[in-house]
Each structure stands twice: as structure tokens, then as C-alpha cells.
Image 1: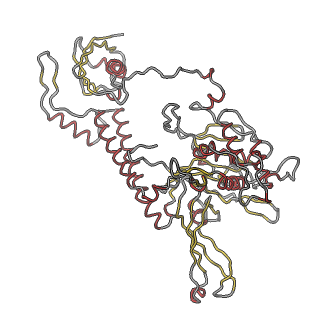
Image 2: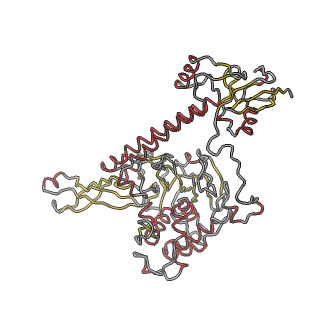
Image 3: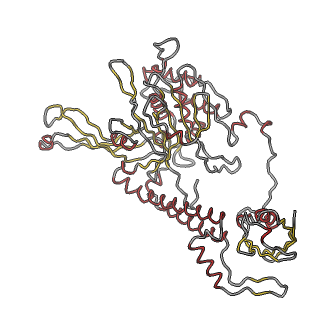
Length: 563
């Protein structure tokens, strides 16, 4: 190992450093990090030929013993600060099963198939992907009351028959293990409340397979009636339905007669507003994309009597979305009743769906007016983020050759500046100052932060008050319930849930996501890449999307911070 002793001058301080000339420049940077606390990516070390890079060949720099080398840069926030851990380190083998299940990267719990219950397992996994639902269920307490509209006059007299209470217990237990769990209590409550899920199989012993969408709708309907959350801040006794706040949207509809004679007879179009818990993607011979199916679902033909004409005529009902919930459920209407075989047959047509869904075009004019400025600003901010990241990667790869136009202008300023002078102790004194990479990045980050603050300021005041609504019109895909087979009462259901970023147990902050997904095939849980989701468009009896769960994209706070 060939070494040479040099002097590194960083501000008023000097450091005697032994440099290994056989190692790359990155090693010297880490030496200086240990001495100065300045992170390697924030250091600007001036050597022969320009700035020291990570892959610089130190043997070609011609370093001399005692040579003075200038270093610039300041530690980042928290840089160089070594803090003793406040909590004792606990190794994985010393943790309980529940503690292991809470660790970053832990495999989530699967659900054991209890005999044709894959329809329920996949539905429950998709619902569990909603963090606000888990938090609200934790606060739920059993109340001995009959939900309005309960079937067959059934009343909830015991906790064992309360679907919401059993869902709370199930999700709580699932958070404490990485093993498969049998959803016995919840299944019993579901079959008690909705007897159709207790139907026996006609093909043999045991229970019949069911439709996952029906299970989803009935469970969500029960939660809408039973799960209440506090509204109005501390001290307020006001309550609202969790489902109504986070998963329920509103449609503004117009019903108009297709026969022109009705209008001539004085019949006016009727207007109405209705709540929805899901949007239907209707599939016909022309449907190729989710957008086509949603457009079909928002326009329908109805046969009804016209009082003006005194006969049955066809009406067209056209709907627009007037409220977008934070969580949007999309149902692919793939099953229809086939009379000749007396079962729900499956539409095999391939229908693609996006990982990011823009639904602004389906909204009312008033809502669209509130959403468009935010949506367009989101796209601008994303482009800025991409530009900053690309520039950062270029500088890291080759800081001299791959400069942006702004960086080149800064470099020209430096070259046109005064020649460096020499101080009394022989050190080189810099003349006109120029920006380090860290300073340049700080400027870019500041501009990006200002753009995020501006984005927050564009949120419509009425939408800002509704924190359970989508405020941009853009959704990201978080879960998919799939079906494999040719009919609803046969085949197999699974769920794909997008992985969330690791959560810091101390600060509670969630880190960046890796873009991968969990595939829940009953109690078998597997990590898969996003291309598996793209393959769920259908086109045969293989796994195809039946339910898609979308979540409103996060927006920055007034301080420009992403929560």
C-alpha cells in the first residue's frame, strides 16, 4: 500500500491525513467525514484537474508530502452528530412474535382457507390495507344494538355476532404474527348476519364458494352503519361514519327521456344526488381500459313510465362525480347471470387498468374547477423532482463533464474571477467564491420546497375542510382482489396489496416504498414485483382484477412537507 501524508484545509482547521494512493477518491472522502463530520456527498475537494470524485485514481494526482489540499462543505442536518441510542438494542431472536411482526420488512399475516373462504380472505386483506380503518377499529367498542336494515330482523345481541367487533379483533391479532390465521370469529359473524354466506355447497360437503364483491359490499355496508369516528376535534361529541368520510363518494345525476315527444309535452329532466361506495367498470365488446368501463358505468339506460306520454319509454341517466372519497373502490363487473346454466358466468375480456388513475374527467364542472389547478401543479412538482434527481445523479457520476447549464455558468464565473492569492503561511486563498455541489443542491431543494408550498395553497378551501376526500383528482393503486376461473361461485380468489415504506418506530415517519407488492394467496404470502399487477387485466380464466382499491395521492402540507 503506497501512502502519502498531506494537509487538508477545511475552513480555519487543518488536518494531517495519510492518503492511500492505491484506493479511489471515495476512501479519502470517508476519512475526511470521520474528521470533519461533513458527509461525502457534501464535500468539495479541489485537486489537480478539478474536483475529487468517488472513482478518482489517487495515484494519478501526483500528491506530494505536505501538500495543502482545500476542502469545502458543511455537515447536513444531523451530520456528524453521533448520539448514544436511547433504547437498548434488542436482537430479533430476543423479540416476541408480536414484536417481530412489527419490524420493518416483516411478512404480513395470511389467512387460512376454512373451506371455500378465499373470497373472504382476499377481501379482508384488501380492507386491512387501509391504515385509517385499522386505527378507527382499534377504538371501536361493542354496542348491543340492531343495525338499521339488518337482514331477517336479526339483532346484534353478542360481540360474537358483531361484524365490526370481530373485524377489530381479527386485524389486531393479525398485527401480532407473521403466520397464517384462521378468521373463525369473523366468518361466524358474517354468516350470522348474512345467511347467504352460510350456503352449503351443491358439489359436495362443506360451504359453497361466494362472490368476493358481494362480501366486500356487505362488510363495507355494515361498517358504514356501525363504525363511527369523532369529528370536530377535541371536546367535540360529533360523530360521523368512517365509511362515509373515507370511502363514500357522491354522484350528481340527470335523468332525461330519450323520446323527444316527452320534452315537447313539457317533461323536464330530473336531477338527483346519490352516494356511492364503489364505481362500476361495465365491460362490453368495446371496453379495453378501465376508463372505458367507468364511462359506461356512469351512463345507463332505464325503462320507466313517462307521465307526460302515458307509456313506458327509455330514459338516459347520466352521472358525474360531485365528491371523491380518499379511498375509491372500483368493481370490474365481470360476472353476469347465465340462465341456461343457472350460475354467474365470467366475462373474460381483457381490461387494463392504471397504477395511477386520474378521474377529473368524470367529475362535475364545479368539482373539476377545484381539482384541475392542484392536479396540474402536482405534475409540475413531479417534473421538478425528477429534474433535481437526474441532476444529482449526473453530478455524482461525473461532476465536471455532466454539468447542467446553470452549473456551467457558475463554473464560468469562477474561471473569470480573480486569481487565487497566497497567504503568509503559504496557503492558497480563494478569490471569488463559487457554489459547491451541496450549495447548488440546496438552492434546487429550496425551489422545490417553494413549489410544494404553492401546491398546498392551491387546494380548494371547501376540499381542504374535507380531509376524507380526494383533493387532487389523482389516485394511486393500493390493492387488487383477483379471481381465477370461469364463474363467481367457483375458481379461486387472491389479493395483491402494495407494500408500504418502512416506519420508524421512534419518529413514526414512513420511509420510501420499494414499489413491490404482497400477494396474499390465503395463508401463503409472497413478495412480487409490479409487473405481476400489469398481468391482472384478464383475457382468460387466469387471475384477473375484480376489485381495485385506489387511494388519493398524498399532498404536501403548508410547510411543503409530505406526510
